[in-house]
Length: 263
Image 1: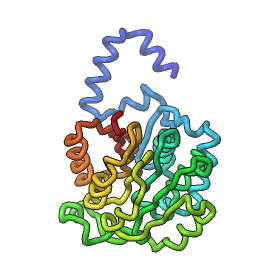
Image 2 (image 1 turned 180 degrees about the vertical axis):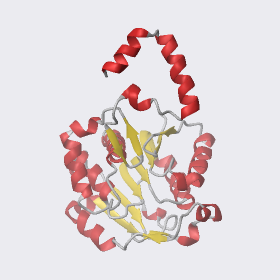
Image 3 (image 1 turned 90 degrees about the vertical axis):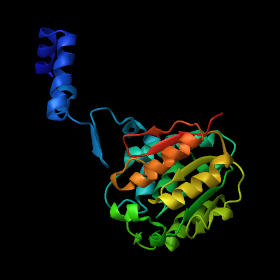
Image 4 (image 1 turned 135 degrees about the vertical axis):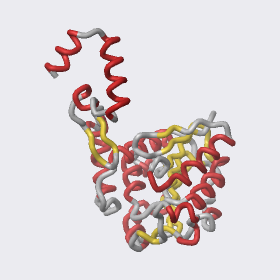
């Protein structure tokens, strides 16, 4: 910090800016550490010197730990992604409509969201759609297979999900099977929160197209895989989806994408 201050005191802001731009062009951003300090967050593919404010939110920490206990994330934590989902769900909690998650696995994200917004008090229903045993190989395109996607990939977990959400009774509807064949089982006409995380283009676009007109104004659609390396086919498909509807799609550094239904 003292060295950075001495440099800033000695050189003008314009000179420093030009130097940083030049060095970053030729060195691949190696000046980030000395300029911005040690990373405060390094998890789930995201490294930043900015403060992860959700760490100070006791309600989030408690909700996330409940989701984490389901064993949904064996490869490491994804707290910033969960924080985005909780933000989107908080919007949905204040709107007239139900919650939908396509791509549930063991239910960690859904349980985190439900605890964060105190779902039981809302009088809403939460529809959870998944095969509960991974990707459907027949739905993968040649492009997705070349990117490294494969069918399956997850341990069967339907019974575990049923146990996890049993305390919520009729407020949670667990729908088992492959999207798009199960989309008709979502009988709500108003959706206030939509999470899509099925790791493949075909079912994700089918879900988005099916539910778009049912999203209430102001509702968020969160795309879990939007920016991830193996999921370029999904990213391009959702870029086209957003363009056709003249809505902006926000790419997040977590790898997620975010679309808000216009008012």
